[in-house]
Length: 459
Image 1 (cartoon, helix red, strand yellow):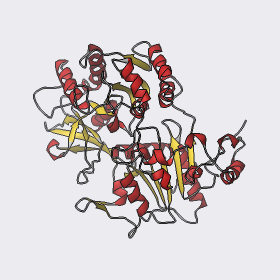
Image 2 (cartoon, one colour):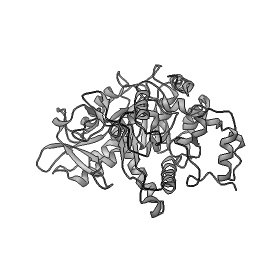
Image 3 (cartoon, one colour):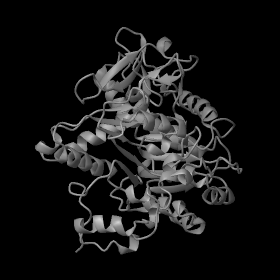
Image 4 (cartoon, one colour):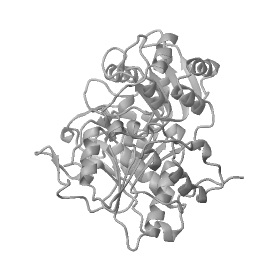
C-alpha cells in the first residue's frame, strides 16, 4: 500500500499554500509542518498563528491545541497555542488607517500561518506580504471554493488556480517522490511557480455521508446529482433535509427554529447566571444556526432576526418589549479593541445575580488556553446585531452541529455555487435546506463568482 507524503520530512519552501476543504485535516497537517520547521531550525522559531476574524482565530486556537496533543511532547513544546487576527499581528493604527508593521518596520516572526485565507482580501494580503521579512516563511490555509472576501480580490482562489490538477513540474516531482511510495505522475504538469508550492488535501475525515456528497456535487456544479441527493433525503432526523417553503413564516421553518433554540433558552437561570452557565449556553448556541443568503429584504437575515424574536416571544421563550432581553444572542460587527472583542464574536445576553443584564462572550485569557467568560454591559457594545440568523458570509470560520440555509424564491446574482457550498460545509452533522423553487436552487449551483484582480497573471 502506498504511503502519503509525510509533513514531518517533506522539504519546505518559504511560501506554502495548503488548499483544503472542511474536514480534510489541514490543522493537523500545518501543526506537523510547524513541528518540522522547528526541528530543522537551529534555535527557537517565532511563529504567529493568524486568521482574518476573531471567530476564526478562536476556532484555530482550539484546533491547534487539539492537534498539538497528538504530537510528541518534544515536538509540541515550542509551538504556539494561541492565534490572533491578522489586523492585530500587523498592528492596526485606528486613527491613521494603516499598520504599525510594513516594509520599513517588518514583523519579527520567522513563520506566519494564515487560516481561512479565502476570507483575506487583496489589500490586507498585500499589507501582510510587505510586512514579512524576506527570509520569513508564510503558510496560507484555506478552501478556495468557499466565498471570497467581501472586499476586492479572490486571493486564495487565484493563487490556487489549477490545484486540482497538481501541475507539478519535473523538478518538483523529483523533490517529492522520495518522500512517498505513491505514484505522483498523475499530478505532473506545467503549472505556475505558485502551483509548485501548493498542496491540496483531498481526503475528508468528516464528510463521508450525505452532507459530504452534497458538498462535492455542488462544488463540481452537478445540478441533477445535487437535486437527486436532496430529494432522496427523508425524515426530520436525517443528516440532510430539503424543505420547500411557500412563505417566509412557514410553520416548517418556525417549528425547526423554535425547537432548536427553545432547548437552550428554557435552561437559562431566572435567579442569575454565572460563568459556567454562560459557557454551557454559548456551547449550546453553536449547535444550531440559521443562515440566510441575503442580508436585507423579506428573506434576508435582518428580517429573519425580527421574525424569530417574534416567534420566540409567542412561544414564551424570550421576554418582549425591549431591545435587550435575557436570551438575546448577538454578533459583533466591528473590532472593538478596547473590549478585546473582534468582528464575528458571538455573545448571549443574560441576567446576573445583581439583576443587571450583561452580554457574555468567550475569550482567551492573556495566558493559558482555557477560554474565560467576559461580561460586558450592553451599553458598552458598539456595532452589534441579533444573531438568530446570520448571512453565509458572517458564518465563515464557524461550524455548527445543525446548519440550516434559507434561500429566497427568486433568483439574484448573490445566489452562487460558492455561497451554497460554504453554507453546506458549515454543518458538522445535519444540514437543512429551506428552498421553495427547484429552478432557484439549480441556478444557485450553476452560478459562479467571477473575480479577477490580475494576481494570478502577475505571478
